[in-house]
Length: 369
Picture 1 (cartoon, rainbow, N blue to C red):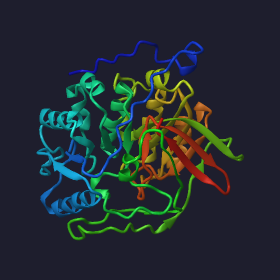
Picture 2 (picture 1 turned 60 degrees about the horizontal axis):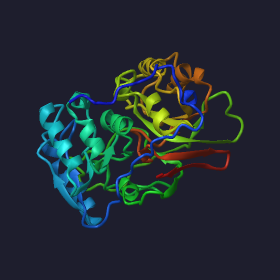
Picture 3 (picture 1 turned 60 degrees about the vertical axis):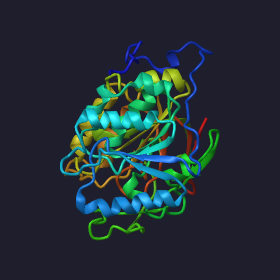
Picture 4 (picture 1 turned 90 degrees about the horizontal axis):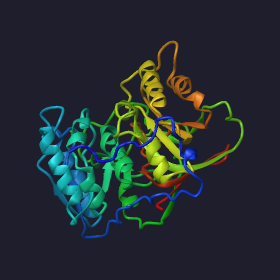
């Protein structure tokens, strides 16, 4: 069914247009994971090919080792670009998100066309149900972001199930760590200073791999023209994968401005990240489109994930971001570990957050309130 939420304002409206003292709707957080809880595994987008099933088993065992019972759904097929027909994927995801015995749902990874699920999800029912953690990134942004925007329920943009066996570098947390925190918790993450330059581990050959190959150094980069001074900026987190959420901007499923009016009149920290396939010109076009659709209207700052996506001779990835988002006039921080380049810095959509960036300190603090 289509979402019942519909914009009631012009796309040009901003959070500051709300009358002073207008009450806001609090973000709803799923209760923390506890030993014995069930974790659902389904593939709303791409499934798992047979040669990679051993890695799936390793990942499931990693979650079970934390004391949880794992329930693997039927929509896991890996013979095509989706795991099952859209109606079946939507039904299984709805069933897991509304099952009171399942406290978190995580996919093996992203994929390509999770967008076909959106008109099939019952957002009214999800809004009324007890919140359940939905986890993932990449094409999962296509579902995570609308779920938070339309229901006010926090979702977790973090490492997918197949990434979960990796040991987390110092300074970062796993999605399992964050999903176990009670509402009101405050936690900080800092860049580890190391990342992977390219490529992925071959799970068909090394299904048990647990150590990242982090063969390059680097930390966060201030891109905007005001980048000479120390920075400390706050707002509620929202965002996702550029290649997927750009298709939601300007639709009822991507109305970030309405979300800010309802939940964050103080403004947002909007994060975006690129898969790695699209060159700088394509990323530039997508970001321009998102800006024109109002996706960044309430942004106090923009966080940009580190990417391995190619530059063009006349335009680098950093330049593409500045070309599209420079007119916002807000701080832009690039090379954040929130994208497709390992390691991963999980972000909670809807959480209140503070970013600090100085020559000696880089930190992102999130508060689940």
